[in-house]
Amino acid sequence: MQRPILIHPDPRLKKVVAPVPDLSDELRVLADDMLETMYGAPGIGLAAPQIGVMTSLIVLDCAKGTDEAAAPRPLAMFNPQIVAQSDETSVYEEGCLSIPEIFADVERPAEVTVEWMDPNGNAQRETFDGLWATCVQHEIDHLNGKLFIDYLKPLKRQMITRKMVKLKKERAREAG
Ligand code: K1U
Ligand code: ZN
Image (cartoon, rainbow, N blue to C red):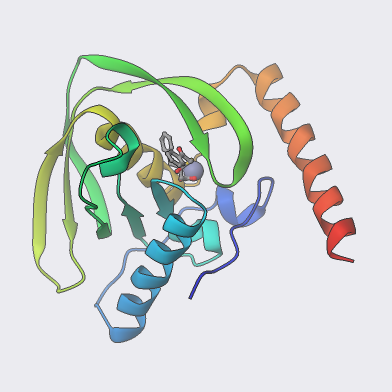
């Protein structure tokens, strides 16, 4: 089932989430719903706070982000942690499903090693680069109440926030 995505500004997008203590069928359904919501948006990542669920879960699939012909690679990560990062950085023009139609360059470590628990309860560890590295960092930031616009200059961030307030008002008016 697709879930509605929160639009910035929303206090839930600024909170730090709690870790998942134990996996359950309910959390596995949540992961499936988040993947469905991400593909439907469409997007390449989604974090639980973006649908108002304050738990440590992200999903991502960047396979098609750079190669339309690539096979899908959906990942659901519970309690993801960055355990190593490169000194080398890369700049990517990021977007966010909670900040529609806004894109801006963000500089981040080019490579990160992430540890997480998969939906079967198995511990996983992998090193990501390219768009995968950018996206996994963007999604883990969401779990810590951080948005990509927090990397921008205050004036630019303020302009974007005002635009989103207007967009939310328009959408609320349209919804009646
Ligand atoms: O977290 C989110 O809001 C999802 C976001 C992830 C992201 C995008 C770009 C850089 C870092 C993280 C998105 O998916 S925005 C939509 C998007 O980038 C996209 C949509 C369709 C095809 C390809 C990309
Ligand atoms: Zn985002």
